[in-house]
Image (cartoon, rainbow, N blue to C red; front, side):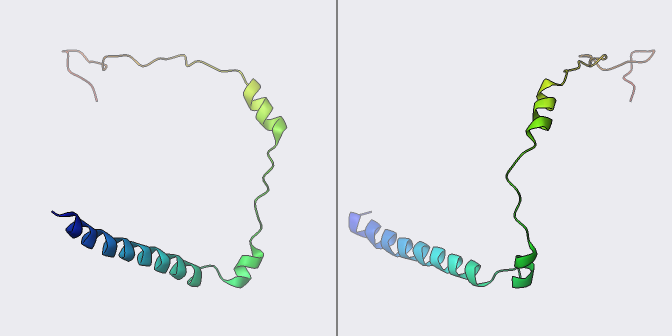
Amino acid sequence: MKQKDIILLVVPLFFLVLVWIIFSVYHNSVSSTVSESLNIQIMPIDGRFDENTINELKERENLLPIFEATSSPPTTEGGQVSQ
C-alpha cells in the first residue's frame, strides 16, 4: 500500500472513533439512571477508618492449621481411590 492509501484509511477511521467517543460521553451524561430525588437521598461514604480495629487485627496471633493436606489422595483397601 502506498502512504496515500494508508492516510485515506486512517483519517476517516480517526474521525469515526472521535465522533463515537463524543457521542458516548454525551449519551451517558444525558441518560442518567439515578433520579434527582434518589440522588439527594444518597449519602457519601465517610473516608475514615477505625484505626483501633485495624491495629488489633494486625496484632492478632497467626494460627497454623493442625491438619495439613497430603500430597497423595486417600486410598481404601485394594488400592482404589475413595471418593
